[in-house]
Length: 449
Image (cartoon, rainbow, N blue to C red; front, side, top):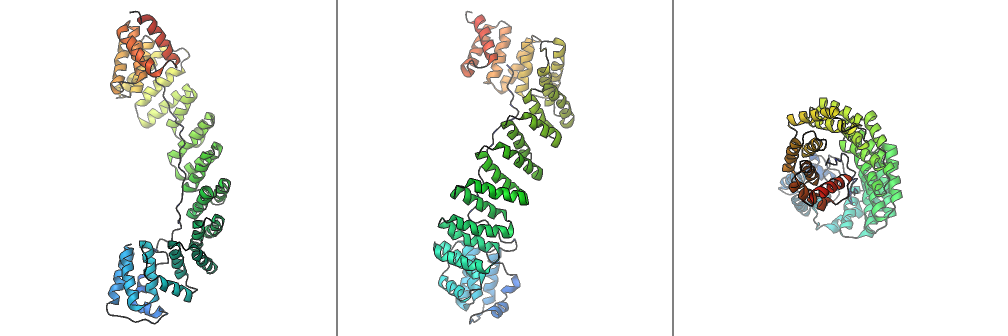
């Protein structure tokens, strides 16, 4: 029995992309929430010049500053925060206070100077860095109403997207999602940052259950600014859940055009096939994109065997892969109007022999060739030997066992044909026409022997 060769599979499984709770990225040159000063600004003289509170210096201050800066730069925030704490305790300089809170926040540890930060922020209402730190502190302590108030003050004075995203966070925690989206949209409009966009969409989908709003948000961005891979994939995830395959096709085409990733070309074809539109899939591959192997699969799926056979010659010349001799034999055989014509079958044998000569050992091809030799009474003994080679690789393959049983039936060897075919029927049942035909013939001839 010839194998059922499935060339195209149709799984469309994309997990819904969920962006994290905080997604905004500060500029690359910054490693902390507030903009990172250049190294010279940490010079004790600069600190002294910028200080707004009575301070005093001490011996060894320079060494502590260098250690704090180095550890912060190496992202060892916990150790860095410890040195900034010591510097603040010894000098009471505001700069050290802010740096202590910044590094502590990134280390995920509390600061012992929370009251001092609150007092500093109150006395310096125009210091946005202090407000950001205070807002983060209130979020950590789950003091969401205080965080909202700081966020309101922050966004009244700031034009930076990061501040509007920060201001949205307490409203997310208190499930005031519409208000949080208002702030997030302000942040998005200032930067067109796709992470913020996806954060908005995540809230709309997961918490507000407003799928249509999420689609509109994404489609508006796509129409105005194009569709990056992560935005297109988020849209695709929604359309997959809604089974809107017609919406998926242009998305995957756009993804393939922008990324040149073969996976998206395959997704275009899968979507066409899901819509049972194989002609459009073939047209897309022929006209717009070159993937001859995929095109060959579609021709075989459509039973356009002559076109498939012609393409095997192209693929053989292009890839030098001898499997295309075997595919040429299969597509040519399937194209024949009279599959019992011994003259035409010689070409099938010739191509299979070329494949084997060049080292093709794929059991599917071996079974197809062996079964043809048996079924068409071309060379039953040789056909059985080839089938046995296929079974050496897959001894329980029922298609191969069916071919084996049919060969021994033709040699009148019921001792092997009957139990082999019986095993096939026990596994596969009598659901396929070819199995039914073989079983009836073998059972009728061999059961009484």
